[in-house]
Length: 336
Length: 254
Image (cartoon, rainbow over all chains, first blue to last red; front, side, top):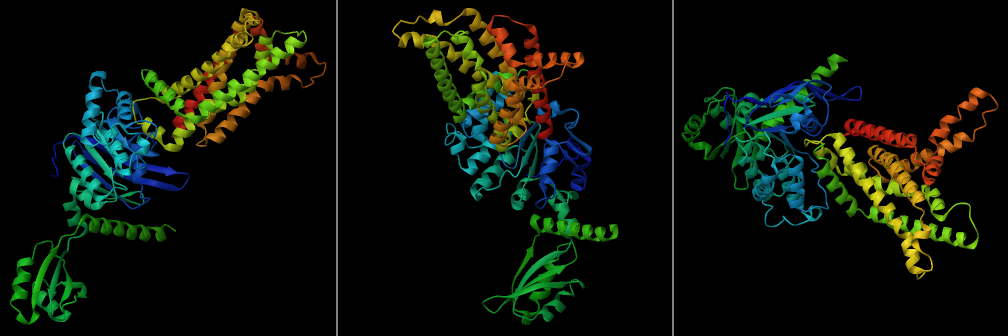
């Protein structure tokens, strides 16, 4: 269940963060966002958008060229030691030593992360159970594990010290659907206890598990908010599928009585003689009832089905990144 | 510094899993064993100026040139190649703790391998059926001096290997760089001392500088039982310098 509380203190605060490689390549360009404690946030963007660079800066692995990032009130640049005690980080490549067993590795990491000696054993058992490593992988060498189990070991390592903030760069990359669901359930179980920031390309998973989403493109922040808010911002129009046996003009004239700016986005003929029209109505309100009423009364339309198409996060992501590309290409010629 | 024991044990474990460690160990023991036998044989055939133990230590540089690169090339290069250094640096461990623990693990193996050569006289004594007595082959002053020199100079040589490993992701390049630097450290001062500086008294006084840095001179002093503080200071301070540089490289390059 998404969890939104406006009064929660901030876990992550990023202000005007910029990271330049060389003299001209701006991987992250004036990015500002904040994440509240206990929130699960999806960090989205196309390849090369600057997601991993931002996460590496937050993990204290890479210094920012300018701007400020803080975790639990501690500045990432100046209070690195405090930051390391408050984060769990899983990099995109998830590097693990091949010559250790899962249990040995987690004990070693628990020790480095300064877990009290008397809690180490029980904590290792707990995270192995949480990540479903206890029975099949516990005594196996990490080098012999499948990709899915390796990802789980990476996640177990990130959460072993119960950090305030967990940063995961593509935790579900290369996993099969069952494993993705398993990881989602695991992330869900952290809700409210830890702040989680996840970068991923599997947008359906992000939509299901995240309270809010941050989208960046070309190193710039494109959007931040709950999937619902972003839907309203980037895709305010409603879309409906209408299956019927009539031509486009007839259905359009019928629907324009519901809303004058209705338009047909596309149409496909089905094998049984019906046509599926994708209709767009530039209105946030649900007009399903009016559409049904209008079309049912017109018998010559031969209506079979009406479906409201709810835009998924993928549509929002595509609309947001497309808009940012348009803005970038508009800015570039004027700069020249 | 509280993480050093954990990191040291992990590093030692990782070294013991690496085939390069065993290759270095076997090569070292075979080579040093062969050298020892040759020295004993030549001493038995005709009287020598130096004892076999002294001559044995004079050839210390041969194993150092390949053993140190083989023991240290993996430490940072492999971690950097796999990316495990990145996850290590997101824990409350400092770069200096990582550098020190890797150095201590490599140095521990270096000393362990040299310690095995202490058994050579006893092996000879056993093989000869008691004709040669182990105690006769070992002069205490030479042994103490020689092994002290090996231990002290090993600090700098191991630190150099760790430093070159931090510069690259490739173990091969790390080993080659380490070999080159060790070659310069061991023979450089001797080479500089060979440069003719003429009769100018000011220039002649400059020869004291390479004299101070001459590794073989240090070894000779140690072998004769002279424990001079200057070489101690030279090797330990430069080892610390190397470890400091390594820490800076690790911080800068991750």
